[in-house]
Length: 468
Picture 1 (spheres, one colour):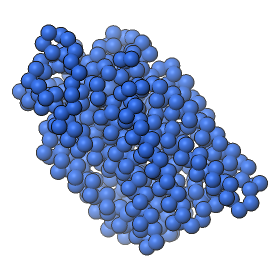
Picture 2 (cartoon, rainbow, N blue to C red):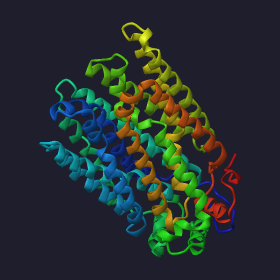
Picture 3 (tube, helix red, strand yellow):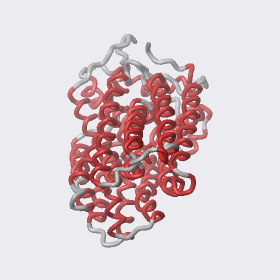
Picture 4 (cartoon, rainbow, N blue to C red):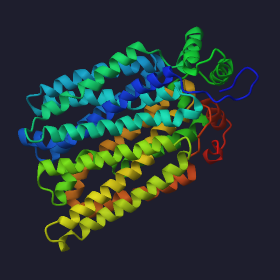
């Protein structure tokens, strides 16, 4: 951060920042738990409600309809009422939706609850990293925001463990009910925390912003950083939807929307939602065995994301993206080949091994690149006064692409086979690699205001080079 004489001082991580980031990142657990729990629960829901494949896809993807709605509302809420109150509202809606799902007696009631849960995670999925990015020191921002992604993977892993725990009884209601625990933690934690200093300044709450920033930086000399934030606010309009059409925001939106769509069209949530089903395709017909194998994928996801958290402020955003997406291309190609030649394998044991190794390599590659870096970059590249709206639009695109992939996976498998589906995802991953190479900037070590100034000047994203 800058001090009064204009020099740059590396801010230390204060206890306040650590606590605030840890609490906000619990929103990632909500996101991850609900994303993962359906993979095991759907096996029993399909049986109880006698669902054909089309309704199974709807039951699985209904949460994504809510997530799109949540992203639409969340962008406006984050800018209007603040990051903190938006997260609190999401926690309350999540708890209500969970109660409805647990008590559902038919598919229609179940879908209502799932849509409410989706609205909650649609808001939390981007407001949590937004809150973290605005409170963390620049030198640690990448790791701090990526902690939210680590918590997402942790939530997914927990959900896989819960699915396995209840797989013998088939109690899918208990699987969903346990999601109320992190929601309650997030609700209580955010009630006790202040809003981000940047949002407070954008709303002219100067004294409160100074108090929060002093606690966050562990020093009373925060006026250099305050001056930078006020200068950035002064150069912007009032934060209307029409401001998203400004030329200075056009390129950040292209980068954000491109990453949002490509992240999903590479097929990540077919693995998250349908991993047990994919393992059953490969010959693991036991529900318990397929869920246990899925838990192994979830463990790899957590470990690889933890590696990304450590590396992202050291290596940078672009290298992790380029390496990670390349790994996804290779693993998807191999997975498709395994299914293409499965007819030559007796008993399916070799196909099961190829599937397990390919999925673990794929998830590890995603977890060091597109997983954490996408959410980090969209919290960094947009101007302050429209940051919530811009992230909301980007998140809408992300959830819409997620919905498209999820609702078509089983249909595509039935129409063209597993091999071709995974090769299609590999082709999209190749497109994603070139998109990253050509357009994605390096933001490591830069303040949010420095990134904003770069795009306001109309410079190309690749001309923005973070600290070496």
